[in-house]
Length: 505
Image (tube, rainbow, N blue to C red):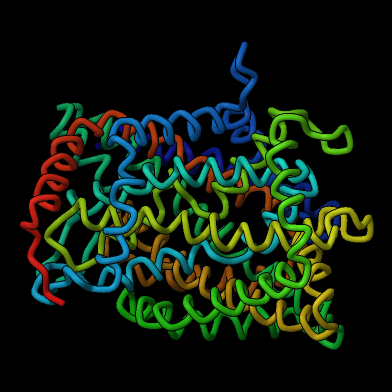
């Protein structure tokens, strides 16, 4: 443990050094905003070098290789559980097996909506649009493939989170990769130090991702969307930040129970609105849908020259956007699912694996078809502007639709902010103890305000890198721990097939 703390101190020393250098540079240029961008640019370089190191022969970036191999490994390791228990998962979600006496803080349904609130959002609206613009229609196919195999990764992480969670005397739960990597490696592999290192690294990355992708990026994009649709707000970025921080603070102070109460109502409504809007475009152009699917499959393997990167480039775009959208393999959702009320770890994994299906196979597919049918991704005026590409597609229904999409996007971003506050807080708690959680909350709320105020291209890149980085310790660790889950899965399947599961509804 001393080695881990020493490593963290060394890391913070390097960060401090970079801060001083970035501060000196900022003093010569344009102030705090330049300082922040310089600081994060220094962080991004080393992370990007490692994450996107191109593996010889197969020519895949390291992080994409890990995600692809991880998804395939767990799918085969558990015998295509994502297919076998697909129907069963909906029985669990609707409460058929819920016992209020089971340990935990929230229901299966609330755990799922809490996790979805962190993933269904700007990744679906903006991220998918950018993937299509950069990789063409073929990127959608790799989105689907990544999500299909990602279901098994999410099953693994959320089952492990339940199996190794810590439940305090007051009933609060601490779980997720930072816990199961530490405890699992000590039990399954008898490598306690390896587990502590992986768990600590994961916790540090999660805190970074919570401030970046889960917080600052959401606030930044919320303001950009509002200012583009309501120009009167262009000079009131601080007001947008303060308002978002205020409403987020009200919820996050209540912990996972309050977050779950909000998201269990918000997520179904906002997903319903968004999917119905996309369906209006699709149904209005129903004759073009078969051709669109044909183009998706064709360009997955034979992309047009107008889209960069060839087949590998298209695959990378699909996997990268899928990871940012549904977070399968990243392990963040396991932190929320660890709090679910159940005495069956496998059962919560079954609930969790539906997340990528809803997020990617339903919501992202709706976005993709709406964009491809309208050709919005081909408009040069919205190059690189993900949310505006989708808004352009929505405008084909009615001129008011981009405004409604903006409002929906703000709600999506808000739900992501409150869910990621919980993820970051639990990671922070792992590093510094529960008594320090108030410090994290104060910092988190302050950072929400900064998001809309600063023009932070480097921070957005940092958000991407932190989120993807989380997959490295998590996926690698889960592969080593998978031997613990295989007999549990087999036993669960046998009891389910024999009708020995206790039903409450």
